[in-house]
Length: 81
Image 1 (cartoon, rainbow, N blue to C red):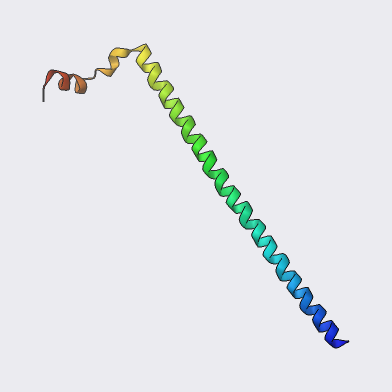
Image 2 (image 1 turned 30 degrees about the vertical axis):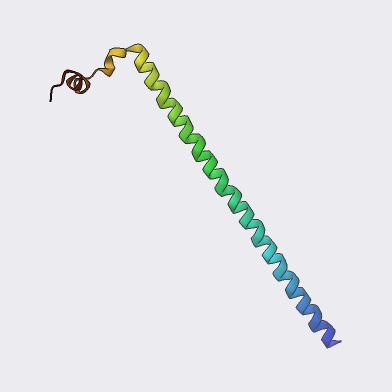
């Protein structure tokens, strides 16, 4: 009977280790999913910022198109250095 108890203990330890490894695998999957989600959200935030900047640039050009001709640009057009 002690041999059976020892075998049962060994089986219980093996089952516990397998369960622990399964939990680690699940955590790794969730960590990977969280990493992907973070990258997606970063991309969405960057796209929103770019869209906002583009909209602002277009609005400025429509409101005052002459504002694009700064002194710096005019000196290039006129050949002034």
